[in-house]
Amino acid sequence: VLCISSVCQECEEMVDFEDVIAEPAGTYSFDGVWKASFTTFTVTKYWCYRLLTALVGIPLALVWGIFFAILSFIHIWAVVPCVKSYLIEIHCVSRVYSICIHTFCDPLFEAMGKCFSSIRISTTKGV
Image (cartoon, rainbow, N blue to C red; front, top):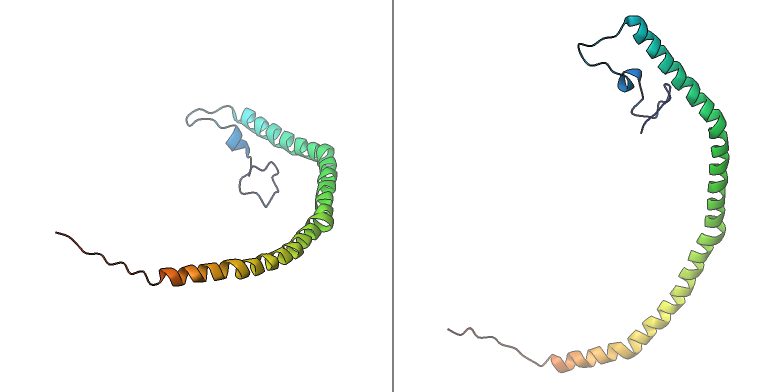
């Protein structure tokens, strides 16, 4: 997460002047230049963020609000009823399927089990 706001408390990292513009050890510019660069960077970052928030943030909030309202509407009025209807219908089908399996397959497998239960297999180890 990269945060531009100096007052954001949710972000773990923030963009600071020293992170963006850093002089290597042993190389230093004039103090006045460094202070003016720091002030320019900080003020520009602050006002660009505010300007972009005012110009783009409000329309994007409107777009995201509409998006999540539509998503909630579809979920409440379409998805959940369809899923509930499907579960009701599949329950009826599963009962019919269970009756068919118990009627036709259970006797078949029980008869096959009785037929094969008398078979004995023995193994001998040959030298």
